[in-house]
Length: 205
Image (cartoon, rainbow, N blue to C red; front, side, top):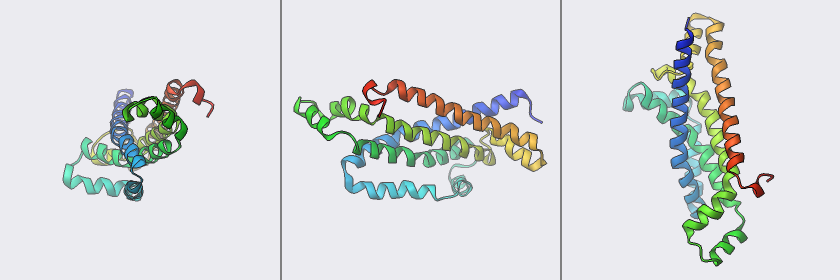
């Protein structure tokens, strides 16, 4: 049976896996979503590729990565990153698409550069939808990260698979319940951050 120290370590490992994967997915997925919104002919192929990744079973994807990256933290983070991409890319694309064209034209008429329009007009209006994609990716990643224990990356999945092996419901719940609570806590935290960062006039929307 695992102690409190073991549970705390596993929770921290789980949080680290999720945070790194979602941060990487955001850093790559948001610029990619902005790019395909500006170059519509790329939207179909890019969204098809990131959607196809979601069709690969999690265990199979981890298995594909082991010969390349070995076991442990690296293949787990890469797998989580790949799964986290779709909501972020798709929501960023949709968010940029729904930005008020009149506001963009007005900003351009005031002499703003494309970069200024992006940071001062497009992104503030897109923020609620962008954050929804990040929240979805985060919740997904917490769930998928339980499988990281299968390849020696730690996390709360360690409890779950130990419990399955021992046919011990208490050990399974020792991993499953904190994972569910972690997903809820991260989603609530991001929801608060989304509300704080969203311009007051767009909150009702």
